[in-house]
Each structure stands twice: as C-alpha cells, then as structure tokens.
Length: 250
Ligand SMILES: Nc1nc2c(ncn2[C@@H]2O[C@H](COP(=O)(O)OP(=O)(O)OP(=O)(O)O)[C@@H](O)[C@H]2O)c(=O)[nH]1
Ligand SMILES: *[C@@H]1O[C@H](CO)[C@@H](O)[C@H](O)[C@H]1NC(C)=O
Ligand SMILES: [Mg+2]
Image (cartoon, rainbow, N blue to C red; front, side, top):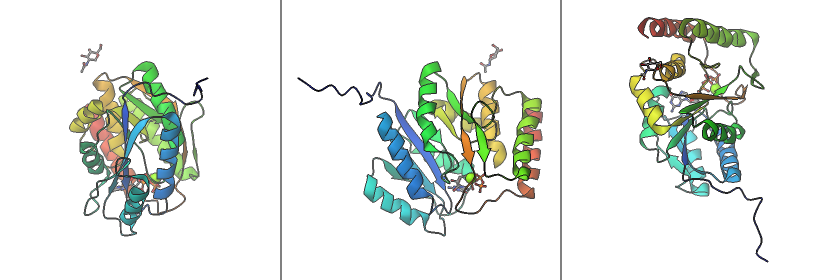
C-alpha cells in the first residue's frame, strides 16, 4: 500500500515569501534568526528566500552571512550588502528590488521578532486575502518583554498619540514585523517620506488611506539580548516631529 504522507503539509500555491533582513552589527543574532526562519518555513512547506541587507557592519556580520549562505545555499540566503550604514528605510527598498517572492516579510534581525509567528501571518493573509498583515503587540496574546517602564511608556504613548491623531485602523503602528503583498509594499514605499521610527507608522497610515486591507496577528516582542539599543531622546523628538508632519500632511 502506498504510504500517505498526511502529516506532510502540502503546498497550496506557488506563493513565495521574501524575507527582508536588514542587519547592522548582528553577528551574534544572525545564525539563530536564520536557523529559525528555515525551521518554520520548512515545517510549513512554504517557498521562501531570506534577503540579508548588511550595511557594512564593523562587527563582521557580512562574513557570518556568507558562511550561512554556504551552509544553506544561494537560493535560500541572498546577500545584498551595501558599503555603509545608509539607514533602515533605504535598506528595505534596496532589498525589495532583489526580491523574487510575491509576498514580502519585513522583520528585525535581532530576535525581537520571532519567526514562529510567520506561519500565522501567512495563514491570516490567506484567510482574508489581506494586502498586508501586521504583527501587533497590543491585541490578544501580544505583548512586550524586556523593556523598562520608560520604553514601554514611550511606545504606548507614541501608539496612542498616533491612534488619536490619524485613526489608522490598526492597533500597532510603530511595530515593523509585517507581511505585504509585494506590489502593495512597492506602492507604499513610493509614497512614504518619513525616516526612522515614523516610517513604519506612515506605512500603515498610508495603507489605510489607499484602502488596502489590513490583517493583524498578536505577537510577543522580546527586547534584544545581544547588541546595543539606540533609543534615545533624539529619536523621541524626531518621532513626535515626524508624527506631527504626517498629521499635517495627510
Ligand atoms: N541594513 C541596515 N540595517 C539596520 C540599520 N539600522 C538598523 N538596522 C537593523 O534593523 C533592525 C532593527 O534595528 P534595531 O537596532 O533592532 O532597532 P530597534 O529594535 O528599534 O532598537 P533596539 O533593538 O532597541 O536596538 C535590526 O535588524 C538592525 O540590525 C541600517 O542603517 N542599515
Ligand atoms: C477609499 O474608500 C473611500 C470610502 O469608500 C473612498 O471615498 C475613497 O475614494 C477610497 N480611496 C481610494 C484611494 O481608493
Ligand atoms: Mg531591535
């Protein structure tokens, strides 16, 4: 009798998921995040690629990425490095240009965003045919771990302020763990002008304006263990300034 592989998840379509992984000094985190991505994509039977965009990290992140590419193959690990630190916004654009998937997943490489949520993002997207699926720390089982009170208050405050000012119809605006249809991401990136923390927020605000449909998946966000955090007074000032600009122009 022919064995039925009923436990094997079957691939339902030709959808392909391109993960954009921007890195700056993530040498310690990269092997684990890549391993976890392979694990969850593999278990789900999904077609995927991981695009690593390193901005000339002085800690040798790129060398680690090259090793990973040797281990896992060039079709799974795609390297699109840049000479120097040019910022997160342009890193996404740079990575997107090389993406071959019809869906794009944006996440941090510092293990704050756990790959275990990706199958949920994908299922959510399929369920509602959403244009984008956003991870949310502020619904259901979502949450934040490892932040001090100050940072929790800043994040909550930023989120609340934005909810009041812009009514974007999504519960987590400053998070960056999201899945997009590729053409949707392209059209959003074209329109977004903000830099830094406001960028993620502008993306979702514009998505709502353009009547794109948004699905949400609760995620737990864990603060980075390795590497330095950079949230300081400057970021807060530029965040509020960016928010008000967005409010004035939309
Ligand atoms: N390519 C590239 N990646 C960057 C740049 N800045 C940050 N990253 C990466 O973008 C992701 C998010 O940056 P983080 O430094 O984690 O930002 P954050 O989560 O707001 O702050 P902390 O985790 O508290 O430091 C990480 O994977 C970083 O390595 C950059 O200029 N270029
Ligand atoms: C979005 O939907 C609203 C209400 O249905 C409509 O008035 C508006 O023109 C739509 N915007 C775009 C960009 O399609
Ligand atoms: Mg981080």
